[in-house]
Structure formats: structure tokens, C-alpha cells
View 1 (cartoon, rainbow, N blue to C red):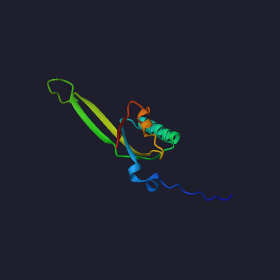
View 2: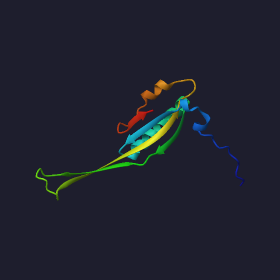
View 3: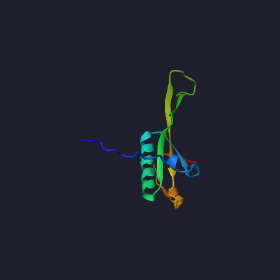
View 4: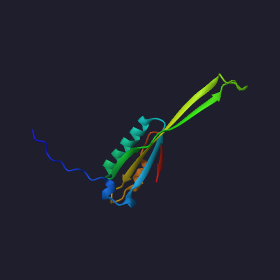
Length: 117
């Protein structure tokens, strides 16, 4: 068997102008919901003719809280709460014809918070 040559795809960030890029930051407590949101955005881009790049996984932020159970300040009885926040960054390049309004109607998981820059 002979291995055939296949062209490498040039990334969107090198082909398209930086003004075209829409940076989408997604925050969630679980990575599974971020993965689902990423798949939804990729499917949307494929349907509309746009392109996506990423996701870039940022380091997670951890918040550890220890609260007293009793009102008198007993040290041995505490609630332990560990909260993690994951952040993934994706770049969306809309099609040249337009159709940017449709991005507002994407149905993402309700546990994902999205910031568009």
C-alpha cells in the first residue's frame, strides 16, 4: 500500500481577515456541556457556510469555600464547597454573504454562559 499525499487545510485565521472573526468565550462548571456547545456551534457553521476554529481550552478556575455549620463558630463542623469553572474559546468566521443574525438563535445548553467579543 502506498500512502497518498493529501493537502493540508489552511486555518481560517491565516486565510480570513481578523475583522471577520467573532470570538466566542464559553464558561461552564462541567466540560461535557462545553463539548456539547462546541458541537452545536460547529454544526451551525457547517449548515450556514461559516467556519470555526478551536476550541482553545483555558486553565480552569477553582474556588474552595469552607463555611461553618454552626452559628457559634465551631471549627470542626464546616461545609466544604469546591467550585470549578471551565473556559473554552472558539473563533467563528461567518460566511461572506452574511447571515450573522442566525447566530443569536442557536440553542446551547442552559448551563453554558456565552460571551461574544
